[in-house]
Image (tube, rainbow, N blue to C red):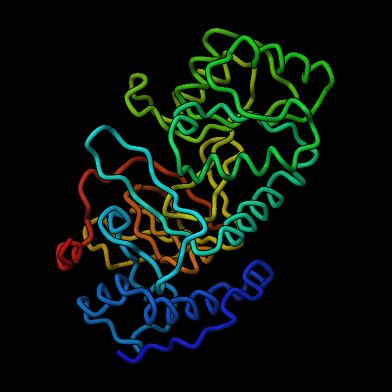
Amino acid sequence: MNYLSDHTNLAEGLFDFNISGFEAKALEIFRFQAANNPVYRQYLELLGIRLFDIEKLADIPFLPVGFFKTHKVACGDFQPQAIFESSGTTGSVNSRHFVKDAGIYQESFLNGFRKFYGDPADWCIIGLLPSYLERQHSSLVFMVNELVKRSSQKESGFYLYEFDKLAETLKQLERRRQKTLLIGVSFALLDFAEKFAMKLQHTVVMETGGMKGRREEMTRQQVHEVLKSQLGLSQVHSEYGMTELLSQGYSKGEGIFHVSNTMKILVRDEDDPFQVHDNGPEVRRGVINVVDLANLYSCAFIATEDAGKLYPDGSFEVTGRVDNSDIRGCSLMVV
């Protein structure tokens, strides 16, 4: 394949381009990664993909997310500034994301946060992420830690299982009418809410998912109903992110996610995973593919294992998980 590799200014303007230029930027990044990412290049070759076959975003092949567990998905040979690793059960294989430039990740999540919530300096940022803090290499902890640093409130920080202290802190912040973000893993938020019922009027509660055997599995809707009931909330917010992505989506309620400017959602058919659809006039159902332009030096085109709905305005909903990989081609490459 004759893929271009001279993309020395690829990162320039990554967070500044008009959203109408998304497809052109995605195609440029595709050509760069096809030339410089050995894993992605081999995947394309085994699929018989030719450069001139790719004319629009939906034509781009999406790399199955499972490759981050079995291969080093990276463009070129570099010393990573960060290595993010997914959580997992004992004996499981975790995903690893080698990040060449941690500054791109930082700029990505700060741009996304500002788009949906404004300046982090205006917020008290509280992280209730015990399962993430107990291990290294969490991209979520990296993100929340940076938001905490940019907060102007002395109460900002991480809490492990200090529920008494957290409850008292939230009450103080509520009395001051201080805008507060409590971002936490689902099981810890549920544990806290069940022990300390209260009415939060100036606090946004954001769950990041994750039971991981800590509690009986619940749907997102069930988790939200408990949190709303116990904490006096009208809505519970959510963050859509993963180790393999450097951009995030956010939901301000009802499980409907909106994305930052460097991210776009498409869906693929469950029966034909290479049939990919952009948003259209009707709700599209399928398995979620993510374009993440911030994944500049890994792979920007990720086929997830999340089933979902894609709405006409580009927002999306996660409805479940695909138990077994539906991407033909995973077995083409030797682990």
